[in-house]
Length: 76
Image: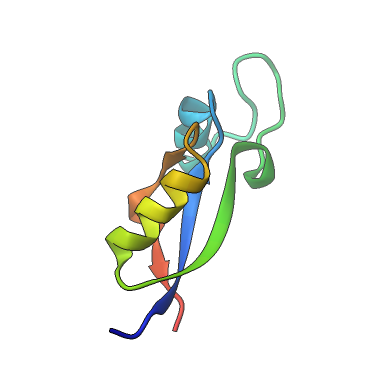
């Protein structure tokens, strides 16, 4: 089976609430910290046979991170 390229978003440890609020338009967290994508998450480009396989590979590579399954995209 041919592999496809996926983009998987991994949410940094301890940042799930900030990530969720940032996606709702909040720019500053409760402690006054300016929120931005690089602070909250990282986007991993990976080859896999399916979307689930891509997410599982990223989970294995970054076990302390959470995966935003809704943000996973096939790139081509």
